[in-house]
Length: 285
Image (spheres, rainbow, N blue to C red):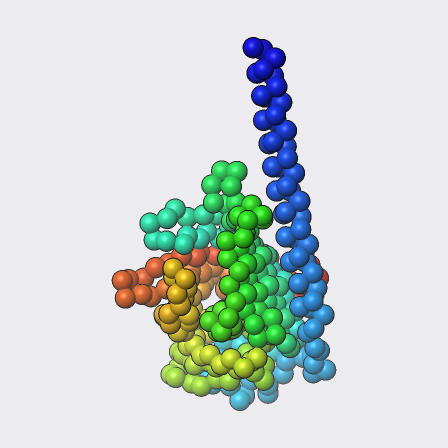
């Protein structure tokens, strides 16, 4: 009887070791895939010869946008062409669901707009999900895998293209010199808000930035496609921002919440904190 127990335990130990090995390899392959994509993203980013932002560059913009860029301290600073940053966050997919801790890193290019967001989400003890959101050459793609191994989403299409473009537009607050890019236009609404429109890769979408009296961006709102039960619908998407800090001489918001404003009520599903930002460092962490 004792020998049987030992055999069973040995088999179980072998199975557990095999599972751990498979997960380790899957995680390694996922990280390598994202690293290749980041390198490709940075390699395709062109470089503008005009590298320093002048006060005169801001004059064509609406007054609240000028005020924001001056507050952000971009004047007489080098144009930001690439960004890498780290985040800590919590997220949930349903209102009744518990919040899940998230650790993420993100990479942006500006001359040719794009980003890659890589996240590790702790869904439960010893159970995690990895995600990679991508906006590259005007196309969006969200990849989600359980334990880096089992694909549960690989979303593509015009709705993803529009959604990732809007995400890029909202997250421009972390690299504010992008507000001067040729693919972005501005229209003043009033002294504390401006409409911005981004056209790239055959997709055009708009949103509204709201500023406080100091010149800080405090909110971005747009109509963005939301996927629910395999169906897409245009819904109001809101990102609130605050807690401005200085990174590489640029003031940016470091905390915020992302909310879907639905007919059934507001659903806040993501709360983030930016913990590290490096400008013009086009390399993988």
